[in-house]
Image (cartoon, rainbow, N blue to C red; front, side, top):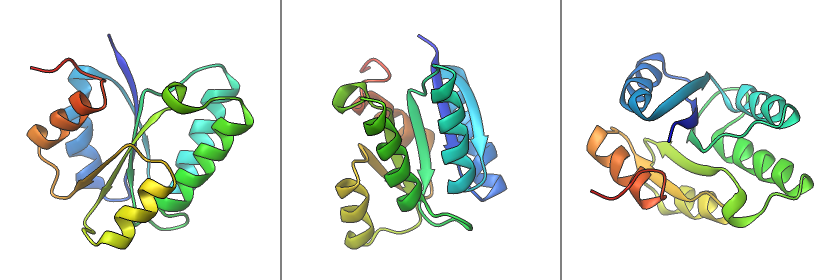
Length: 135
């Protein structure tokens, strides 16, 4: 199975690293902020295409990850996409404080990784989300 992945990260080095770790498992698209992520997600949805996973940084310029998460879930809801049919969203951040974590889960993310992101942590989350078979 080839995954369709959207990596949303304002830091170039982090984008390159995540893309390198995820490329063996699927096709990676890139957005540099939440506003661009929402636009790409909307365009894909309009074409009947779907992402399997969105890796969404919380702290970004123009639109942060929390707002992008909220808008993506609203688009899915407007299109009748709920629960297990919705895209899996993994929040990525340098923040480990509980308020960021609670806000992300309240807005319905499925997973949360604190940076620095290692391949081991990333693959464990993909397995947890059911996107990769458990080893």
